[in-house]
Image (cartoon, rainbow, N blue to C red; front, side):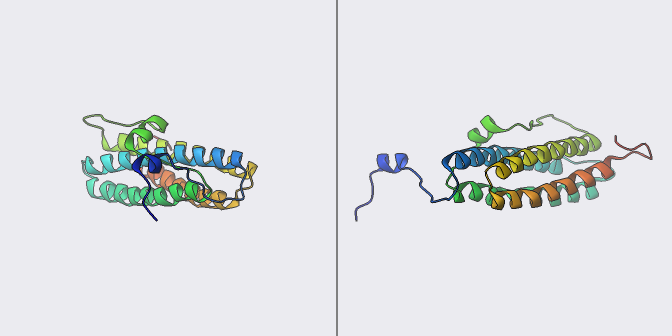
Length: 176
């Protein structure tokens, strides 16, 4: 068997078998890919703030963000592989991420520690909303496996929101 020519390899269709309808595959894999772009955006922002943390609570905040970034990164491969398992495609480049991401980057030269944590809290809250929307889409198409993964990721993300909220509280007045 001779290897395919480079041109034919670039245009060969991926045809992973699935019992989901073609509409379900398209809808869910697109939603997962967009969600994945947001997850990568949140991962890089969390690492950015982890690397640029300063101040009297440096050690605690630095370690918190390191733990959270590890948890966020751990979602990326299962999320991308789920899109592929059902017969869809997923991210191909950082440019693809930039075109799809809904969460905003933060390239500021300096961000205060509490502002970093508050921004991450808000981004994680937004990510939960995006995951719930994707879960609803999975429910519409009866994709229980993707919905199940999302349920665990929603729980993990809500935990990050909780930790970031409690860390940014200033006294008894509640949210910062």
